[in-house]
Image 1 (cartoon, rainbow, N blue to C red):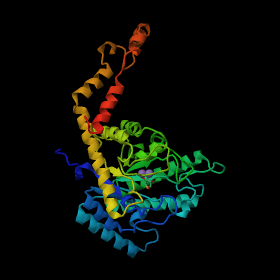
Image 2: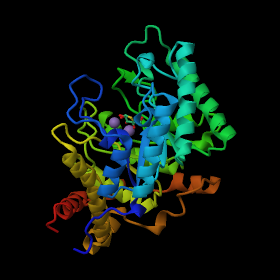
Image 3: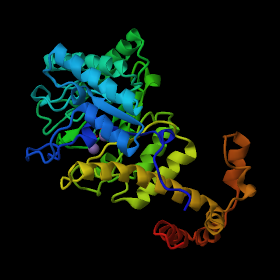
Length: 391
Ligand code: GLT
Ligand code: MN
Ligand code: MN
């Protein structure tokens, strides 16, 4: 096969420092680390070696929370050097507003104004840091923005505070000339019992209530929609339709489990196939960001296998999508299932009083229409055959 599924810069494959840099600790628990920490600069080199295009970070992935200015400068210099050596870019940055104890009851949505103000300060500094390395997308994942009980927290207040924070930070970005686009990332639960705005669809509704909705979009994550039992590609399609697909977090996840953050393509082959097919067909031009971790069984060779696997699976799904679209038998069945028929053109589309009157008077042969088999069983099995390499 001519296609050897090698990642290239134009594929825009990116990873977070926190992904390949994960020490293998359970995400929100306290088991011992399994892998030694690597410096940000070494993680950039690792990503360069496997062929990634970019690297993204939280403020504290790069600069530890209590670093002195001199320490921060040194880390930044080394990080910059590794970027220059490898040619990697930094398309996205974000703020860690969920690890520190001060965020135990939320950051932007905390009831405590001191916490909210601190969160704003941290986000502004994070935006400065991202801009220093050229980031143009700024992600907001509100892992702690929610509750276990609603005894003293009011979701209306939470939404108001979240809105205020985003409006404030939007103005800040513009005042500094950063030109950031914000990408809001939803998750239904974990680490909180319930997280506000739990799905991509909820985020899309909320964005329209902001002062500058045009600068705010979403960062849907496969695992998070699957945790909510939803169809990820459908959520992505809605975001695309709204012109809001600013970024995407690819990984994998069994339905209805804890947050697994597995290698892209590890579990949900068909869903991931439909997703990649969608992204490629609509011409999504943003980063393909892998927000996932290597299994806890792995050393750093295994981390490289993990990162290569994410990119390889994406490219395999892309190739399968091409084959699906070029398969004459498959496409004939797709066309047949749509039953394109010009006879209904006079009724469909934009409303007019005449159209409505004529449609109301029309007589349909409901049983004949309903009786037509759509051949989805046959088509779907053809897809299975194609995916499993026997077609
Ligand atoms: C965290 C979370 C992710 C978010 C990251 C951005 S951090 O690992 O699980 O889904 O995208 O804050
Ligand atoms: Mn996740
Ligand atoms: Mn994510």
